[in-house]
Length: 178
Image (tube, rainbow, N blue to C red; front, top):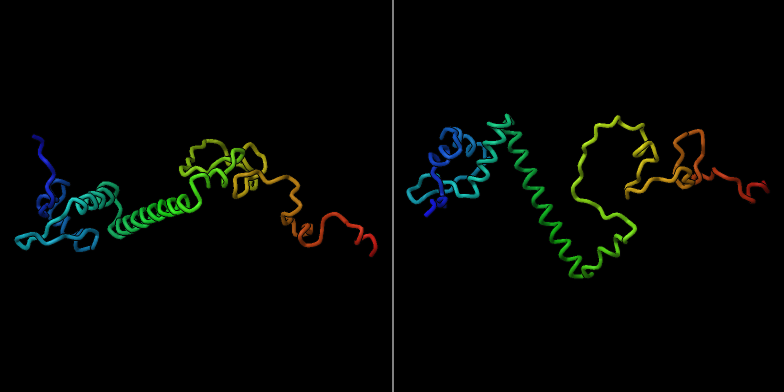
């Protein structure tokens, strides 16, 4: 029968399993990076969940060389990220329950690409000129569409040239009368 993981670890067991000293484990506890519970004999013990967190602390501090303040910041950001993921899953669940699972088809019709959660940036190409999109074309807007070349509603990049919003642009019949 395979040996199972214990429910709690003493500081010595934790240190041995992670190849650090007991002093290191105590320092991580003192810094507030992990919290120890009190065992039956009054000695500090670590739960399985705390051991997973301690493993993260050791990896970030010893293996990656991040100082303890940085480790604290990384762990806090990871907790915030996980909370946002849980909140988003709850929001999706509520939207689908209230509006039906077809809501996504209404929000993103077939001719529109659906947003992707995973963004990969792996380009060895030269950076494009400012304001230029892929292959030197117009830059995409926030929805991923390429902005039209002569978009009359867009403010002019040239301060000398008035935009259509500011009353500039093509003359109208009203302008001809004045």
